Image 1 (cartoon, one colour):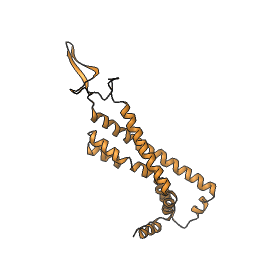
Image 2 (cartoon, rainbow, N blue to C red):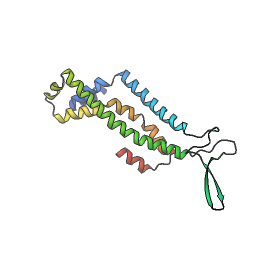
Image 3 (cartoon, rainbow, N blue to C red):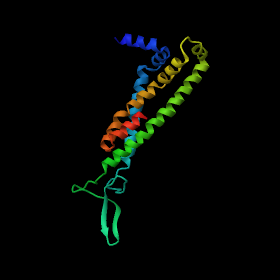
Image 4 (cartoon, rainbow, N blue to C red):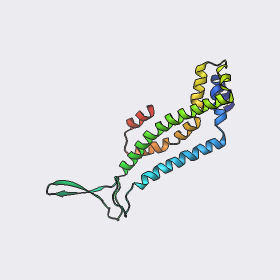
Length: 187
C-alpha cells in the first residue's frame, strides 16, 4: 500500500520524489526533531526567565497591587502574593505572549529558511552540473518547480509542524480566540 502511494507520488511529480528521498533520511529527521524541540524549550525558558521570583518581584506578568489614593487609583509596581506566599502570576498574559512570539517567529523561519534552502540547493545543483540535466528533463517546468518548493525545505516543514502543538496550547491557555488562530494558519 505504501509502495503504491510512493509510486503515485513519483508518477505525479518525480522531482518531489527525488527531493524527498534525498532529504528524509533517519539522521536528518532525528536532528530536525531535536533542533525543533530544543528551540521550543529555549523559547519557553526565555519566557520563564521573565516570571517574577521572590528575589525580584517586578515582572510584566505580575498581578499588580492597586491602591486607592486621594488623587485617584494608582497601580504600584509590586507583585501581589497569595495566602500561601506565592506570587500571583498573570498566566493568560504569559501564554498569550508565547503565542504571539510563535505567530511571528514561525512565518519568519518559513520564509527566510525556505528561501535560503532553495538558494543553497540551486547553487549546489549548478556546481554539480545537474541543473542543466533538470532543465532538459521532459517534465513540465511547473512540476520541477513545485517539486523543488515542496521537497527542498521538507525538513524545515517538519520542524515547524512540531511547533504546532505548543502554538495551539499557548493559544488555548492565552485565551486567544479560535478565529485569530485560524487566521494565522490560513495566512
